Each structure stands twice: as C-alpha cells, then as structure tokens.
Image 1: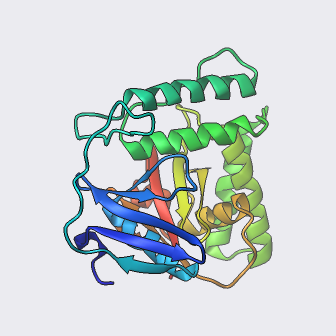
Image 2 (image 1 turned 30 degrees about the horizontal axis):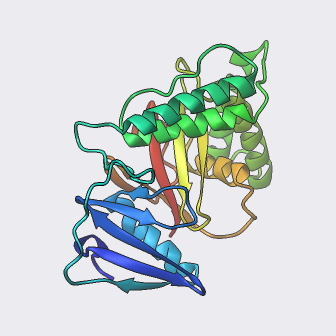
Length: 270
C-alpha cells in the first residue's frame, strides 16, 4: 500500500479478532476492542503500525465508500472527545493524569507530587513512561557521580574508536549506560537526553536516558537491554516524527541529532 494516509479506514483481522483503524475528524485512531479506549495514530506512524500488523500475520482490508457520520455523544460514558489544536486533552484525560501522579507518588513512598509536564502528546507520553519506569525501579545514589559519568564517556569513546574488543566494549558501555540512566532518568536538571523509543515489531516502548555523547549504537544497546531483546544480527534504524528524520547511521550521537531535552523515536529493522 503506497499511501495509507490517503485512505479513510481499514479493517484488520487475525483469526477471530477483528478491529478497525479509521480517520475521525482528520485524525487516525486504532479502535482495537482489547484496549481500554481508542488510541491516536500519527500520520507518520500509521504506515509503520499497519506494516507491523502485516508482519504479525494480520490481513488488512481497505474500506472505501461513504462512511456514516460521526455524531458526538458526550453524554455517553465511553465517548472520548477528539483533541483539537487548541485543546490539549479532555477533562477526563486531565483527571487520569492527576490519578497517575498520585499513584506514582504512592508507589515511590513520597508525598512530593510527580508532575506530568504540559506540552504536546509525545512529551506527555514520554513523561508518563519515564515516571512509570521510576515507580518500579530503585533509585541508586552514588557518592562519585561525576566519576561514573566520566567513566561512561570514556567507555563510549573507547567503543567508538575500537580500542577494546567489541564484546568487552559493549558490556562496559552497557554497564555505564544503565548506571547513568538509573541516576538521571526523569530528572529535570539532568544533562542527558530523555528518549522514548517505540519498537513496532515488538509492540513495546521503553524510556531511555542517555548522555549527549552517546551514539545511536549505544542507544540501541540500552533499548535491547531494557526490552530484553534476544541477541541477533538484525540491523536497525531510528525515525522521528517531529521533525521527520530517518537515521540509519548509528555512529551519530544524540548531541549531533539535537535530541534534547526529550524526544520520541521509532526503532525499526532496516
């Protein structure tokens, strides 16, 4: 399918499961009944999403013709308003964010409120993913934080320059990346970049916090660790939606790409 965004809707089927993906008021939504509510799909991500379904064994049917009108029913309990350019989200969504903050604070054992920053949808998704990750992980305090950061920079540079063996470089770099992430994830004053990485082939996402000098190869290493991906020789590339970028050269650094302070990326096989 050359241009799925030019269509109006699709029916997706795998065995006994059927669901619709269609455009509503110019925005794409996934109406999978196994989810609690419809989820928005950006036009850039739509193709990747459908491609992932096909690779997973789904049959995709294009639905053309005259669609029935969408009639707003705000009085119905399952009605979810579609955000407009001047509306960041519905009042029910704001309520859910407040509940999320309380749940995170409770799980962290603190009375300090956890704030989901305002901004576009991708920023909010990243913030929620980072905070959820923090809720389930222990916070590591280090007396020699500067030393750890310097060692991480040295490990990254050594792996890029090939001064130590590939396996040893990966293990050492991953160790330092994990330490940096545990110490800096979710911190507003961190010098690192908060990157929400989505992997359509796994239908998973993971928040990663890496230093500015980290390369995309280092980021890939951390993603594989976070998602417990098996070792393989598959090659990957990264894509962003705002602005649209497609990066296959994994030697580029986060600083080169200006992925600060937070960004959402898609990781796909080449």
